[in-house]
Image 1 (cartoon, one colour):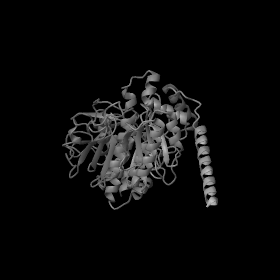
Image 2 (image 1 turned 180 degrees about the vertical axis):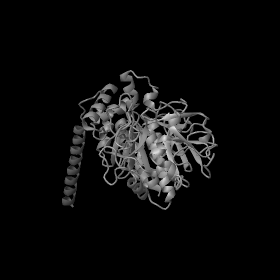
Image 3 (image 1 turned 90 degrees about the vertical axis):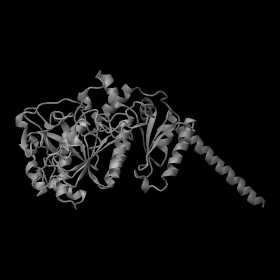
Image 4 (image 1 turned 135 degrees about the horizontal axis):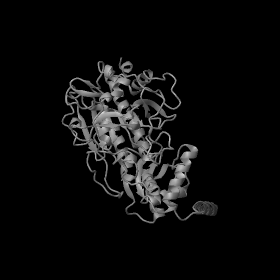
Length: 498
C-alpha cells in the first residue's frame, strides 16, 4: 500500500513539475519586446515595401507584433480562420474549436463581454474584438488556427491620408455617375434598336449570338449594386429581344465606419460601378437605342457587397465574403463575376471564394486597375487565387498590350479588348435611364468575359465548369501555350460557341 502511495506522489510531483515547465515556457514565449503598436504610416510602408521587393504581402508571413499593430490600428477587430478546412460542414468539431478560441481570448483579454462580432454559419471564420498583443501571440500558436488578421485595417484610407488624396476620389474608388454621348464609331446598331459595343466585333460576339444568347444561365455579380434609376436593369430587363429571364438584387453591405453596426443599406448602387458591370455582361438587347450586354438573355443575381471597388475595411470585406457564400449556396448560379479587389489577401474573402468554388461555380475576378498609388502592384487579390479566372483589359487589336491602367502578370488567364486607339473604352448603360457611358479597365474586361462564359455554357448546358473553361481556352489567342503575362489572351466567341 505504501508503495502505491509513493508512486502516486512521485507521479503527482512529475506532473506538476511538467506543468510548471510548460507555464514557464509559455511565459518565456510571451515575452514582448515591442510593447507599442506601429503607426498606420509604418504599417503601410512595410506593406508597400514587401510588395515591391517580394511581389506579394500576406499577414500570415508577418510578425505577431506587426499583425497586432494592424489590429490595434483597425478598431481592435480581428478576423480568425480556424479548423482544418474553410468549410464548417466539413469540420465536425468546429463548435468546440470555436469555444477553445473564445476561452483563450477571454483568458488573455481578461473579459467575457463584447468579444464576438460575428461567427460565419458556413465558414470556419469569426470576427472578434482584441486589444492585447499577448492575445494575438497566443492565438497564432494554437494548432487549430489557420489565420489571425486585422479585420478593419483600412490600408487604402490610410494611404490616401498619407498621400493627401481626397477620400472620395473617383479615380481610386471606381465610382461615377457620369453620362456620355457615345461616339458613332464605337458601336454597331443591331435589331431591334440596340447599340452593340465595338469590342463585340473584335471578339466575334455578334456572330456568336446566332448560336447562343446566354439563355438559361445565371450569373452572380458581386459589386456595388445596380442602380434603381436604370429600368433596363430592372422592370425593362426583358425589353426587346431579351425574354424569359430575371434579375434579382440583393444587399449585404453595412454603410458604417463602426464594425459593430448592423443593418444592410439595400441593393441599390450608390457608386455607379456595379451598374456598369451588370450592363456590360447582360443588358437587354433593347429597342431603345441603348447598349446591349454580352449575354443578353442570361439571368443576373446581383449583390451590393461594398461601397466601391477597393475592398477596404470591415463591412466591405465582410459583405464580399457573405456574397460569395450566398452565391455558392444558390444552385441556380453557375458563374460569379467580381470586378473589385485588394492588393493583399483577405482571409475571410479567400474562404468565401474557396467555398463558392467548392460548389462548382466558375469565378471571374479583375486582374487589377491602377489607382494613383498602387501602380506598382501586379495582379490583385482575389484574382491571383487558383480558384478564380483573372482577367485584364488590353488595347484594341492586341492581346499582349495592357490598357494604360490595367495590371498584367503570370496569374492572368484571359484578356478582353477594351481600350481603343482613340482612348474610348466600352459603351454601357448609364446609371440613369436613357443615358449612356463608357467604362474601362480590368473591371469591364472581367464582366464581359463572364458574359462570354454564359454564352458558352448556355450552348452546352450539360457541361461542367471545367468543360466550359477548356472551350474558352481552346478558342483564345495563345492556346495551348498561355502567354507569360496575358494567359490565353482574347477569346474568339464565335469559335467558342460553335
